[in-house]
Image 1 (cartoon, one colour):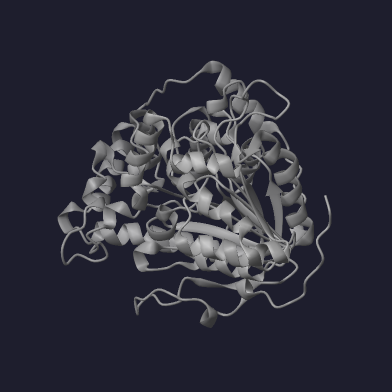
Image 2: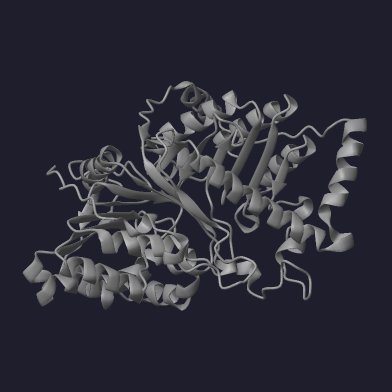
Length: 489
């Protein structure tokens, strides 16, 4: 791959808080805007897929001596989730402070609910879960009860991904990125594309981890405050009594349904030693909470786009661009920037209607290539769709591409949980890290071109025209149905 010329101009994404719009709420403002970390002790290593991330995560848990903080949208009681849950119970028994946050609406499977009960009866706090499906008590807004005043509160979901070990110590370390906790994300069964997703994480060390600790603890306190505001319906009061009773009579023994082959594979995966090449970086952690009017990650994207001069790579699982984002792409191309966007096809998207709705914008985006400023400057825009099948193979081997990363001039990169869709922009809480490193950004770019595009196909203007006005009646019906819910996707 051709190298990218180094650029030493000031980078707006690393600018002061005054250059970012904070929360419109006076009590929040810029309190969740974090500083830039430039100390050489701040280091990042790439975890280039879910199986590598699983091994790294498990081994970090095993080394935990003080605390474990885990937040994910999904934490399911399948073979990989149950393996992790057992480590958490063992670490809690050894005196480690273990805390978990999950999204109440995304983990309703009965076996998963029993796993959460088991964690809770062993003294581990699991925010976002209540026994007997009583999560709704904390989800529904109650007038005059702080902090749940927003009538749209049930639609504001918790999509953050944080895995923090010993966060308050000098050897703090964390994993952030796109992965949830379930077999598909960790690629537990390579023979089944549905259990073999493509995702992207990073491991971080140094002072930036303290910002993640702050973000996690604020989220944790948010859930506690909601329960405390419920008075006699504060479920923590009942859990205190339940734990005391179980300590006296004995904890419930819970059985699970698992596949023996997958159980053994998870054990083997956990023993693999990931080759982590840590690189000193300049970095900043972003935490986005739309329920409080924050939009830091969207602003970070805009600043990175505006700063780029040669090349922008965007890999994003769910791509439904706003008018503002399309204009940001147009401006970059007009400056001569080559923009390449990769997202799911309907065949690989776990939510296929999202791609069908997103395709409605391809025509307008690809039309940028014909606009005079972009043509004169040499800028261009390409859109690729993930097929889950290598270009030289006949069989699909990969499932959904769930990664959310971007690379700018092979010097700056963003990795996180943020999708380029209305839900991440306006509804879901999200996390991301922006870092400056020629070495790591070039490595991400190489992964994009040599691996991710090899499993994808380019979208032509003719394709885009067909997607915009589909001739297939059933496809058109599904697209229009998805369009009814576009603001919520």
